[in-house]
Image 1 (cartoon, rainbow, N blue to C red):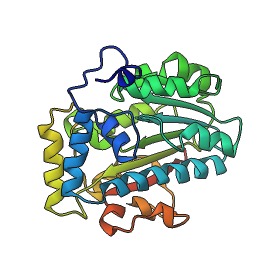
Image 2 (image 1 turned 30 degrees about the horizontal axis):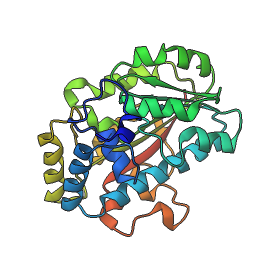
Image 3 (image 1 turned 90 degrees about the vertical axis):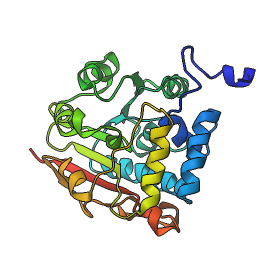
Image 4 (image 1 turned 90 degrees about the horizontal axis):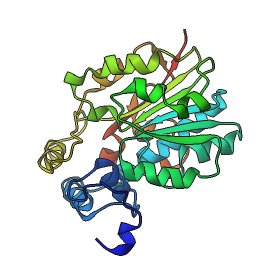
Length: 274
């Protein structure tokens, strides 16, 4: 490891084990990833050319969703699995729409958290929590959430490219119920989730690469109906659960020129009505 790289690696990080947060950073063109993360990314992309476009499409969806929620009057956001900061982060988008917006990021990856802390220095309306998404009580009870989020008012809950890392045996719907419990009517819930509905055998081969990499993150592909069920009491807003690029695209930058990459991930936004 170079001295330059050592400067941004928190103590205790095992640079020999790939992280999907860092692999996603690589896919987005970021620089906070290791050779082992890039190796996984390159192998997956060799099986599914255009995967970097799918990462870009998901990131563009994030921007549209935050602007949509802010336009509906949401002034506070909880971003679960926020990842390593890159261009167009939630607080930047939300606070551009309305300066009073407050944001709490959550990630378990120490590099994602360390760089979020650097990015947020001096911003008293945004913070980051280091926690595993499977422990919602520690997240919702954290000092950062208690200070910044008011659960008597609507919250925008974001779980983008996160729920497919939660296997069925960990009861993802039960996990979601615990996040939804404190949310009042008028809150929104946004999801992107990988699917095998529209892909061939190459996606199975790509998930096999992740499995063999010994990463703690393992993908669980689900169908459209299974993902739709994850919205529970939230009523899907138009256009419903669709390919990520098809959710209210605003221009060419929101859509991949590879149709398969537009449909690799389903995306949807739900509103809590009661």
